[in-house]
Length: 137
Image 1 (spheres, rainbow, N blue to C red):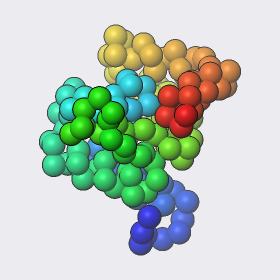
Image 2: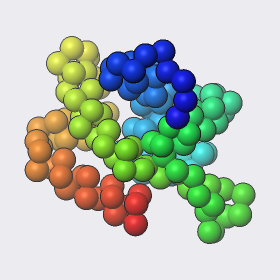
Image 3: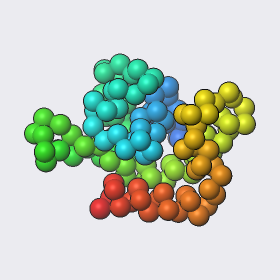
């Protein structure tokens, strides 16, 4: 957590997750259960490895994710959402809802997002519980 252009709540959020790649990384961890560097690197959007490293480090510094050694592979790390990262769930769902309303979403790729949008607060609570169990316990 560092120096920000202003303390405006919108600016503070944009400075953490407003770049081209951070939300894609968070999406991968949150919705696709991608917990390793290589899994995130292989996302459809084709993020460069140096950019992925930079964004993972920034998200860790900002308290959105944590990085811990993988007990099964000494040279790998497992990325997990923090409580602050899990708190982005409603925002991620609203971004998906906006895309359905204003963009031509691929129906196959948007099935899960559409389910989350239509599932309302009850489904959000279930997903939040699952994320807490997987990432914070």
